[in-house]
Image (cartoon, rainbow, N blue to C red; front, side):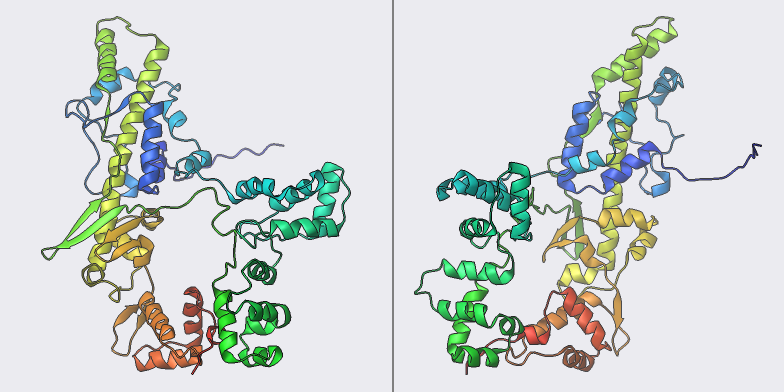
Length: 490
């Protein structure tokens, strides 16, 4: 037996226009340029040029809030014609077709840099090895198995199986090993190594024999590798029967080698930073500008607006100037163009509001530079400009500002705070900077432990635990004291 019940509930749903605004808000400058060009290609009613007042009035307000983006009930002076043209039908298709295209659109909006990848470069070099057909099959399989760091993480047995299964050629691991030896000496040298030890040995092997420290470095990696990784210098010198000077030459040589021969080469694109904001401090005042890049001013095409006016005029006279398909196309594209222009305007206002709030909270940093960062979280900015935290997060993510002291990601200005003995709140990023400076100035023959660093910070007025120092040191990418030890010759 069916049990039918009627229930009333409230739920919040984003309108298509709000979704478009959110997508545009999270785009950096270069991606926004591409997005505008793409929209102009698919919407003939959008064209470059400043909007003429009688053509289009921007109905966005100065105070921008996530909940009041492009109000549905607000009209402009020329919207009487639009409302008359609209027949309230369900066949309006333009906006969704242009905007709501899902994740594929988000990926397409990011500009890509054309470049050849490491795999192609290695395959091009195979021609110089004069390989047989079987050896070429092996080399292709090896190259196709290299990871983005340039290492071969698969066993030779699995490569033998793959060649047998895909090509029907039976091989031995010895044959694969011989081809691997030759592939590893292609550019970049050391690619397709199975671990760091092999990668370093390959690079040392191709160096001229007269290079200072080469022989000791090879012996150390072959016969004292564990001691090398642990930086047990005394143990290495005893095992290899070398003095401190010879050991230092070997270490210095190894440090010049590339531990990740494929790093950065296997990615499909490179990232170039284009600042989204510029902040200048002039005459005791901040000048904040939003980088417009190559983005054009947008307006609704006057030609198509006249067509719409003609439709309304003919309708009043009882005539039909266009068929229903044409009218549907015009009104859908007109609305899509209006929404897109409004969303761009809303984005500009929101971006500037967030940046102004950040500058107001971090005035000392923008006036004086590093060492003057205050604790600040997303909630602080959200409360200042009366927006949702999620909106602030979208503005901050992936955006950069150029100021008198360099280019910084907006996330740089957000951090938790620590209290000093004087009761002053200091950003944990400033504490990290102090830790980094302490480590850079330490005696490399006797590096400082995290506990020692904590005691030094305590003398500077920072009440900070040893485990917190450890966490900050790891976030800075600094190894433990034992691994920071260097050979210092007296």
